Length: 349
Image (cartoon, rainbow, N blue to C red; front, top):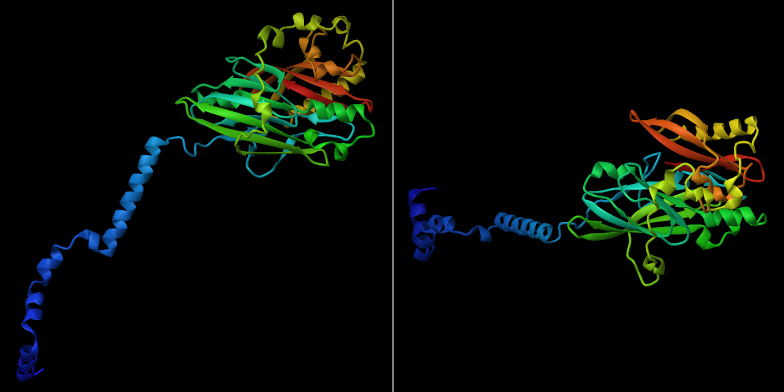
């Protein structure tokens, strides 16, 4: 551009625009970060972070993870239906294994109150530090701060009413069962060490093919859940749970003098033992020794399970088993119905 032309152009510029141009850089350097698009994004991010921090301070237990696993297989039971491989039932009521034994894991759990709607549950503590419960509907378990022990706190769901219905009624099969004998729910009211609470539930259903399905997730107790209001069962003395020849063995005079071993031939006992050993092949236990228990074992009088079978149709074994290098003494009960087939009906300490 020629000097003359440039001079003419400058001469046409309003002096106000020149003044604004001269002051532009000084003004722009004073511009607040709030007026820049990038600055606004940063402020929004900081505010969101502050809100999150605030919520974590005032509501520290929002979203605390509590998970449930099937005992024996250690398969996680999630919100979606999980087909359980630990036990099945036939149309004539014969059980194979346990439909559902499970444990829960989390962080800083103080207590869990379990409430079962339709069937029955019991609780075993492998560490031997807590009160244990026999067949019941409601009870509260103390967990404590040692999370490594949670694996050893096992809840056993026992569908006694379903078994009895199928066993006592030859013309009734799984498809004929009412809803309350095919579906169940275990509500868990969990209290943490800091006093916070959360409610979870295990839902169980029986399919037409005899397999059980379970799901685990959040739950809201409503006015319809009257079973949650039932009083807790009392813990059972360990002397009764495990002692050989305890007072529990005298509760039934007919069984007091029963000889369970003598009522079966060696061949029948060996057949039952084979079923017991097959059961352990699908668990975390390695059997070191197995032998027929004493006739005075109180387990024979276990209401709703072993007590339902007379001598000649049930045999119980004492088992020495190894898991992760540790030896445990366990008990397994094997029984048979009218068809003569043996199946495991109970197992534990």
